[in-house]
Image (cartoon, one colour):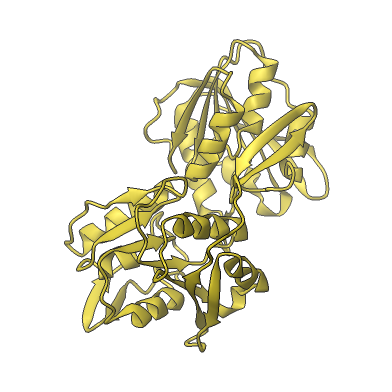
Length: 365
């Protein structure tokens, strides 16, 4: 696995977090390197970084005044890890996509998979822009969508593309528009008689995804299941249904994505709920939950990777009480039951169709 990169005659060590055994993956892309080449030599007072997933920009731009807009708890851990590896200061000025930025002179974005999240970034920048603001967006050409350009043209008069370099390109935005579409950046989704809200960029923006629907059709929470954990909780719909079924239950929602957690706070504001933005369960007490529910992710931006889910499964067992249940829904082709059988004494597929399985695991000891 490639872990060193030379930038401006200096060598950096960059590793992925969470750790992966896929040797084809690395902690930077050519799109991020192309962005660095473009901005080299610019007179920058303050630089704003968006979607610096593993910290390549935080490590290589230490001579500049930086603000990093973060979206994932694992992203913060990755940035800290790589700053430490390169013996650089670990203090980072963090903002969320919902925070106001005082003034944006130059912003760099690795364009995310979610076009909605890209638009949220652009509006955040536009609110703090002036006539000289410039935004440099990097992307790999195989992931290009004309929608990137259409969204950018809503906020900037000048939108140009660079030539390709090692299958990467830039979208360069200048001349912020005087007027732009003002949005709340919240989607409203109907579920039964309930209307859920979620911020742009949170999984399944138009409706409740079909895997979660399949999971909720026959979900039965037992009266004695009073401490419940929802892992990869998204907008909180599964935890909401748990709380509806068992009014005495206390639900804990955990998700790596900060906008997912902020969405679930809206949807469960009248429930007994705790909200944690984290990518692991390490900060939760062992043997503390009666029931764990999950629709675990296996997409990591444009990558398919089950390693993250398998790590979560190990943490779930530690958090469950003896005789506690772990209920999850998953795509059938992922074959999670085989992996879960190595951890839990009792694993059964309680429902399935052509695409999904609902798996129940019982912790016996």
